[in-house]
Image (cartoon, rainbow, N blue to C red; front, side, top):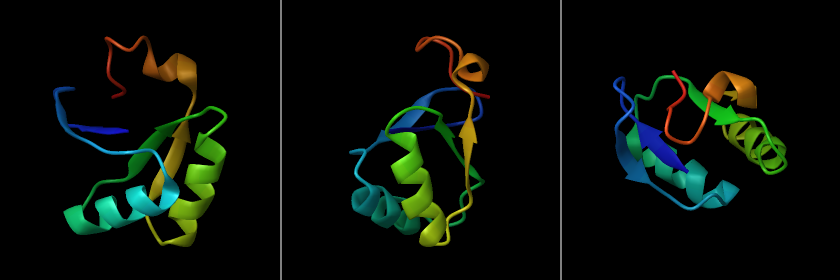
Length: 72
């Protein structure tokens, strides 16, 4: 999992386990909504992050493009 800025530059990376992500996002504070690319793991992450009170949404894979293009 990575955090990208408005220009698409990766500014931070973390493990993709729900508990680790929830703690990590909470430590960053004041985030814009979090977007997860829809996929097998994202459903579990989405549910746990919503339950923790984080503003999170799922993005269709085709909206995110290739790994070289960052979601916008």
